[in-house]
Length: 411
Image 1 (tube, rainbow, N blue to C red):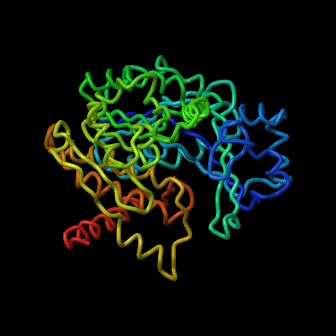
Image 2: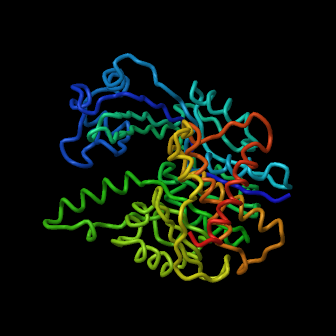
């Protein structure tokens, strides 16, 4: 039985679909300067920082912002659990188990998460319940903002994720062919020990995959450091640490980050320089995504066959469908998480086929990742709930076949 173990961010997303970001209530809590704890369009703030900024409990702030309305939608979110669910759906029917380890509270959000998870093939006996709040993000969306282009603002409560520590990861977490760490910046004790955890998994023979999330705490510290240095530029600001130290990089087989995260982690001002930084720190392969634009990646030959920096396009079929009159009623929530889930599924399938280190196919892994991320635009929320086993896999495989034809045609 092939096993994928994962840990990191899992939470409930509560979407408020029509909150004016120029309303009196929003402006009351809007930041006076970047990183001061107030609300900022397009950015996230933590509950405790917003409460400190406003001098009010979050319950009162939330009531003022939403005007007594309930959320329009609640989704299961998080870069770890969403990617693992996708991998589990893609691998159902194979001799594979995908398992998640993390922290949830004892509350209605936890009940909602477990109801959703029960409809997927993900194994969650290591998803522990702690007294306290389940992590959540309140998402305030204003479709009229920026002359109708729209924008969202996020307020995050880490809740019991702050309690989840390396000691909560049992031996069976590391006894896996693939070990994945997803969005650990929102699980502080795991993030701060990422170098030790990656080393343990790597030295045990596991393929180690890390997908990042926007590190809001490090960005606040970096912004404060910039303000303390007169004339400091974006490039001169402190890099985000990947965990407490940079030691994790050399124990990572595949690092996945979006463009902004890659630049913040590396201190670089372009994707090529960011990839060079990751390579210089010993990361075997790195992939940088950029929304609906091309992905960039390299491999040094230790896991995948050697590959100098290369670019792959997004799926033309996904673009066609999203641009058609019968456009699916979906959103971009979870695109990056499902991208990683497709990567994990490809690695597992290549392992199942007997592939050895140094010969894995990075083009195949990226292709499966690209169509998996693209397909998530066809439905609402990051997690696709199947009506029958194999439903999602069949749809992804159809997109995958078309994508290989696209690459063959050189488009």
